[in-house]
Length: 480
Image (tube, rainbow, N blue to C red; front, side, top):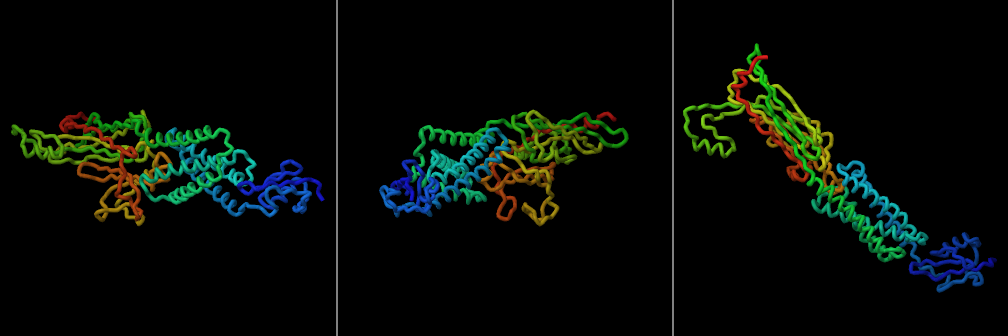
């Protein structure tokens, strides 16, 4: 028989009963089984008679009073910990992409904050066991509170960004489930008064709010402000060199220099480009004394110059092709030059020879492009897995470049359907025509006709001025 005195206090508001042995704290117990476990730890026999009033004193309630609802408490622990872990994994999944590979410093900082918030939630998930348990750790409630507040703030941000487009993504069920969990979690911590025991609650609240505002500010800066504030500008030009006449063959060699310079502050991806050298054919009338009104109206409608003695009858493409490799990129302060030689027969019926070029860029701080963009797809090669529609059928001849576009901020990537850039080049009456657009895929897995705003992704097309040289000056060129 034990001579040590055991005192079991009345249950607290959670059903937990404090235990002392000879006046020294021996822990707390949820049930008789738990009580015997505490007594064994204190060195007492596990099978001692709990009804022996000489050994055990019951305060406020007898030995049969154990109001703890173990099943409900354990379910709360499991649900709270599961929600925090899922939220932590979601934040780590979103943030790691930006933390390691965002295109801007602000984007990387936002990613790092998401990863850090996920780590805090993982610690909070571990603290759940203690807070809904015997609360042996002083700040377990504060950790759970922080974890829940992080979930509320981040889910609010993710849903707000998602609601802008309201598109289905694989992440949407997770967002919805975590949002519902947040409502329950806030109610649970409110009921348990999780902020009790925090030494300086105002400072604690201010710290959480400041961190949330910092994350939101960095997201806004990296996703919205910075791409608008930084200048992206490219200069493109086409110039003729000194022509040379072949001494034996009836042809003229005309050098052409195509030059591209990034004189802005942001790198750019090349989505497509083209140049064309053309010979203009015309009819000369030296007897006219004033412009014909009908001709002037026709020229005004198509936006061309009106010439008194010359009536252009058409253009012939002499040379055309790519200027820059697709999916290459050009950094600020750098340039690219392509030189070619155009061969023109001496008996050509041209009055002028013209050259111009164009290039389409996507700002690098607005997104990155999958490397598949550099692999062209030719419309005349029939494929079962074709990702674009041909109208009318059969497909006209054109070359298309197609690849996934990743937004500069991964928060937008996970709240939107995937976007794809499609850049096409096809022959026209006056050289090649190019078109670039960004759009999702439709229900058939083909490129959708609903194109995104080019401004959102910083897509811009730059066209050089038209360089003109009289054909007569080519005929007057010296031989090599």
